[in-house]
Amino acid sequence: MSPLISKAFTLCHFRPGFNLVVRLFSVSIYHNTRLAEVGRLELPKAQGKYETGQLFLHRVFGYRGVILFPWLARVYDRDLPNQSKGNQLESVASESTEGGAAGNASKEVQKKTHTFYQVLIDQRDCPYIRAQTEAVTFLGNQESSRSLYAIPGLDYVAHEDILPYSSGEQHPLQHELFDKFLAHQPDKDPPFVAQETLRAWQKKNHPWLELSDVHKETTEGIRVTVIPFYMGCRETPAASVYWWRYCIRLENLGELSVQLRERHWRIFSLSGTLETVRGRGVVGQEPILSPRLPAFQYSSHVSLQAPSGHMWGTFRMEREDGHMFDCRIPPFSLESKPDDNSGNGNIDDTNSALGVTSKQPSTGTGPSGGDETVSTSTTATTTTSTKPNTKNNKNDGDDNV
Picture 1: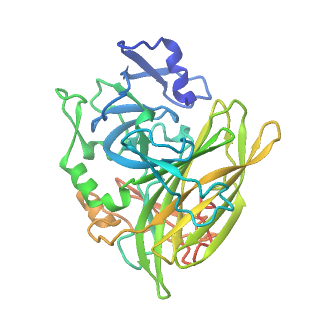
Picture 2: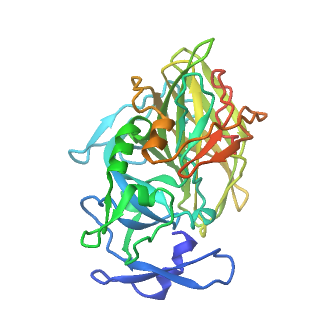
Picture 3: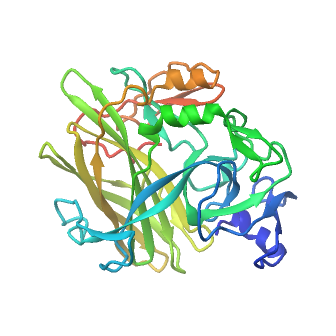
């Protein structure tokens, strides 16, 4: 559990059937600060789904958030026994074409449907969480555009990571899209309901927002979760370039601290190419996963000159006792979708629906094709321009900061 909320739970005991006053540090947890009451904790749901407008604390990262809408995803968990465990569990073969770097890439894995939620993050908590808060990116609306855009404070959260709470405040969450997407109705439960703007935005941007597949695997107590997203296709004079983003979460389930030192990716394209990428750390960091701060989450990008492919690899980890080991990244597919111009990253239409205008960002060129970015802000979004890599798989994107 994140230290952002762990001390809050020591103030009183949690018992089923009782509400709990939740107090969070209002500013940095590393300094002496006052506590601010934010709401009343509710019992997590073991069955069913949470509704739009439900306030929550993130079980791992500790931030405050609000649920926008659910996604039903296929979860491929390589830690599950290779046998059926009910109607929603079925055996599927791994789609990786080569098992060398992945260790057990040819192993059959289980597919299970699971609920995730699209959420907004309270901007006051963004500086104190170990996850990128501009991880949801998409392509510009021009076919020749070399820009990537990000909506800050947007995340995907698994059902079991939701700790619901209620608040009597009319504006309990600070996010620029909160009032545009949700309306306060005190007679409802939860007292925030979706506005037409949210429904239109969800429908319009469904292709690049959709969460379909989740892949998990644990090595020596380090659990890696990967969620890939198809972003769209862009034409270049030489070829069509297909883009994906992928979100990776590492979580230390053990008692000893572990540090990520290196990454080793293998990227296979349907065109027949196999690329190997090695580098120090991820997104410019070598994060330490300790019992106090056990999780780290980041997002990156990859492009192929083919409509599908696969990725797998390892993270080189170092434990505090000096033991080095390779933590497997579960193999995952990169699958494209039919072009849908009505929703694929059309930032101008999205911003028009929200009553704002977008700015054309400047272009920053870094040593690996995206290390430096230049950002410009609008009322609702931050647009970040990168210099995408149009060569087949020469950069896995994990160098980007």
